[in-house]
Length: 101
Image (cartoon, rainbow, N blue to C red; front, top):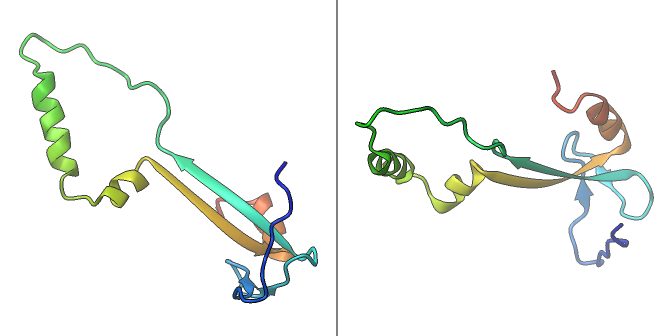
């Protein structure tokens, strides 16, 4: 378990990422939420291909498809991490229904 998070007086105030309420570090009125999203971590389903299948051509097609993406855009399609601060009320609503569905 990580230790307490240190904050200095010069840092901007913490704001709830959902409702915009000002949060007060150390007062117990906030939650720090870490979200990690990872693209499909399972091994790909491989289909049998006939003798005419060219794996090199398929790789070239995929590289071309990604060529217009920046490095960050490509990485965001594979892994994305976010840190949110939520007030107690917003956290309680979010944790019960994180997808908002």
